[in-house]
Image 1 (tube, rainbow, N blue to C red):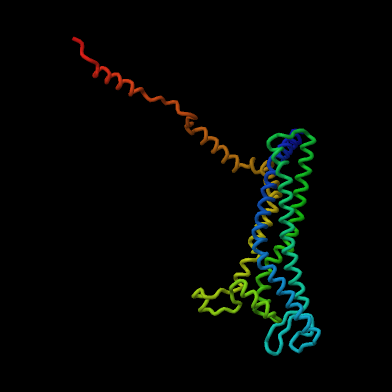
Image 2 (cartoon, rainbow, N blue to C red):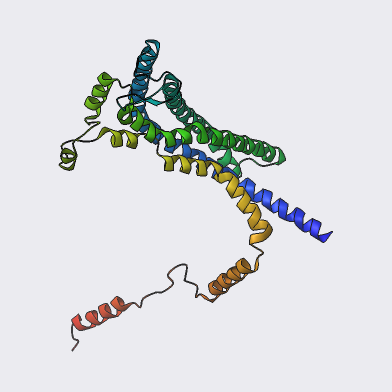
Length: 306
């Protein structure tokens, strides 16, 4: 019976800690995610437009070659090497590239928008609960419903961050190499347009690159796309409220009562008790030396009496 009561008390304390901390953690995670998505979404947009046009043009060229039964183009729906040793991309492969590019970009901006809206919606609620402006069982229940909605959004956002955002970030570097350097067909007209816009070369001379007279286009374009480590960071931040809730429960149920943590906390408390407390304000009053010196000066300057 005592064990059951202790569990009820621990669960009540756990809920109180979640009510006071989870909202703040969730709000900070949403704000951080929409800031990161805004930064990298803006960087990604600079390459997204050019890459979308190039893939669509290349897809059109591949479709025309396929319909014309060109001898160099693969007859089956797979990448093939012609008699000249050139690797060709299929129409289906280019369609997959175009879909992934557009889906990734739209998902980034949709997640940015929803994180911004939820942050604006959650901020006054968390502030009111944290400062005690709203109290009562009804307000607490409504607050927990809002937190539940935010956590459900994090679960849905996790699925979108894994695919297509993370999947696109992983595939983009190899996609650029294949589109511009390794495989055919290529839209040379748009390649020249990209080189002029970004002031770079897709096939630069090594000596000119070392002398900083030319810049390669592929590294510059890859730096503007979504990096893999940033998407992993976004996934971690999105899952952090769940990890935080699990840690709070583990701390209340087991960690804080373990021998190692209990001994460490006792040592910290003992060290704090041994410290000499610093005065909160200065109570020292200096002696009135100026008054004595002034009195002596007055005696020395006083006229002598006869």
